[in-house]
Length: 339
Image 1 (cartoon, rainbow, N blue to C red):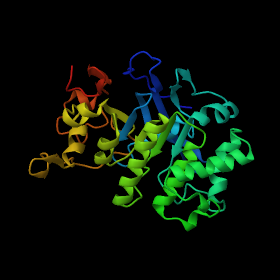
Image 2: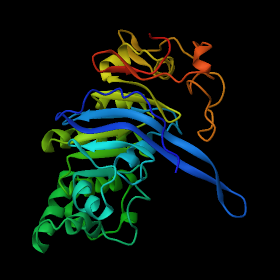
Image 3: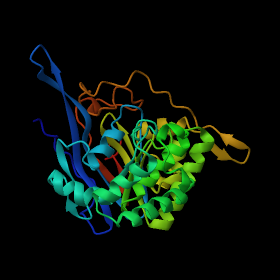
Image 4: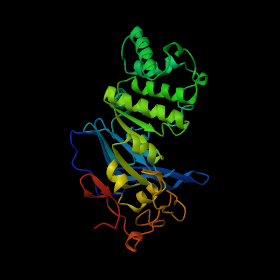
């Protein structure tokens, strides 16, 4: 198995205030070809990223489609086995915990809300069975207590508990996502990874789900990793933002630093497309148009992966991959523009 290349670690020494920390995490998928399906290459979906999220805050992960943000989230929770690096949860390395232990312990404390509210719920199971599954798996409550808990969760996410015996196809997209949130809450997790949790919903429903997630975060002391391509939504909900491009981390900082003082040319280009509120209504930043197409993750460019589209690319960028470095407190950037 090909391992991830070493990359300068850009997070500080692990501390008790980090609920989850990723250190040089990589996920490569083999490319098979020929009649014997031999491995002929690697798709570097996530290529040595480092980040952290503190207890009680929301980390937003943004980037274009295909940048590896969803793969990163699934690797953190071990739905995908990491190719390299390590994931620390509450200071303990969970990268190589056996599956039987992972299912009983770690996954009780880390849950996921998936992008597609239609595909993420089993159409053959009732809502009661769907939410009951984590309760039964982790042996929480007795049978009567589980029914009461399911009713309580449905009520808390804005659904009538009397609907628990219905099937997913009898609900709208927004209602299904609420069911997904109730399922994620069932095991009393510390961390919820929301993978494009509102992208498939209408704008008005998006606002309702975002508001619900914020209320639940305050009520239950939750920590979120919120994965999205919508920078406006991420700005609203996040405390810290990580910007990814072609499997690499470009910039990682507090929300205010990313949105008001972006350092990386890629971050600036993304933000230039987002209107900002002003005295005379919504205003547009100076638009930065990125030329060319997103390279293939199976054959990424040498040096900085962004140099083929970067308006500030130098000769050094074509040869040497930049390390992620801390420019000021908790503001990291991977760019040769900075010494």
